Length: 222
Image (cartoon, rainbow, N blue to C red; front, top):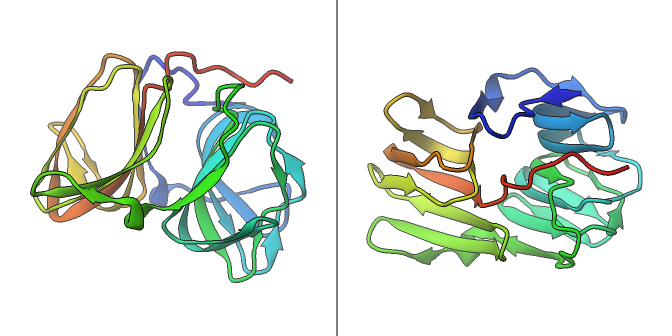
């Protein structure tokens, strides 16, 4: 399966307008944003767990990172409420599920092989003021990529020119440039060399973003 698999081209999906697709596990549905592969895949998805649902135990051969969008996500390491950012490195394993139900934004098979960091962070609590119109949390940064969370004020400029590609998910509010308006649930991926120059709407915006990671994008090795 290939979905938005050409990383040299821009991709935009307004995820809240997309249908839910059942996963192999009852009560777990997905909206696929990009994907190379079948069940073992380099994938970016929105995943919804119904109350008292779970996914079977599995090991992350290529790592996993996710944001809890709503509800509470649970596994053997703890319970993670909405607003939590989690990284599970290659070789980690768990049995994910949710008692009350939850929705997460998740990326699979996109870690460097030697990335062994495992942690969770409260994104809002990590955010620090930057200038007069935003707070920013650096969730993860290494030589390959930078992951951030931004809370921007109404009408604040939102400009990104980082090399290596740009990927962002609007968590709340709106964000517009000359050609498109992104709202809650909108996912945008821009290839290396393509900047983003936008402005937040009258309600401001909360945005998760990753940069630098698309140069070596590849499918998982079985």
